[in-house]
Structure formats: structure tokens, C-alpha cells
Image (cartoon, rainbow, N blue to C red; front, side, top):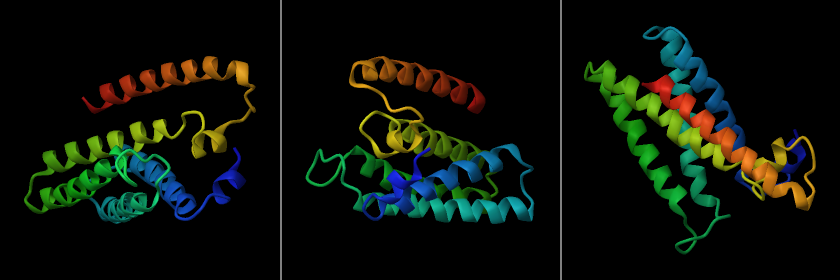
Length: 162
């Protein structure tokens, strides 16, 4: 891993990426641990705050510009903020099943799948997690392998949710 490449990026990319990595770790912990106790709530609120930071900080990241300064990822950020709000409302309304479903889907779509797209070639996280420098002629082969790995991971995660 090459975290120096990440730290060298302009703000807020380093803190955005670190917060996203923490949310993946905490989210996985939440999905696998006991639910409903104080630890679940504290870690959950920490996860929500980190998700809010990741979503809001994305509005200052403009590496992909499709509509002015923005891209579809910014729509996902708005949607994520709304789903966070709705998923926190659910347990207060005694709708634990809705809370559980929304949080799992948010974890998969807003973190895992979106995070996998950051591993595409020419993206910051691709450079951070590349263990071997790829020569130009082997980039297409590696990109194809990455797509296959992503599709397997998405299939596994989808089966986990259902």
C-alpha cells in the first residue's frame, strides 16, 4: 500500500478516503456483531457521522466532472444523506426490519460498490492499493481481472444481504 500517494492529494481527498475506509471497517463490525445493545448504538452513531462526513466531503471532490463540477456520485451522496436520516428514524418508530435493511443496503451500495469503483486504474485509491507497478501493456489485463473480482464480490455481497 502506498499511503503517501493518498496523503499527497489535495484536501479533502485524504480525509474523505480515510473516513470511508473507517466506515467500511465499522460497518462490517456492525453487520457481524450483536445488535440492539449500547455498543451497537455507539458504533452505529460513529458510523453515521463518518458516513455524513464522507457524503458531504464528496461535494468538494471534482475529479470526475460530468455536469459542471459534479458527477453522478454527488447524487449518490445526497441520497446517502437522506437514507441515513430515514434509517435512523426507523428504530425510533420501532421498525427494526426497515432499519436493518436500509443500513445493509447503504453499506453495500454507498461503501462497497462505490469503493470498488475507486480501485479502477487512474484513480487515487488504485495507486494507493497497487502493490506492483503495472506496465502499460498489462493494464488492460489487470483491469479485466479487477472487473471480474468486483463482479464476484458484488454477487457475494448481494447473497449476504438476501
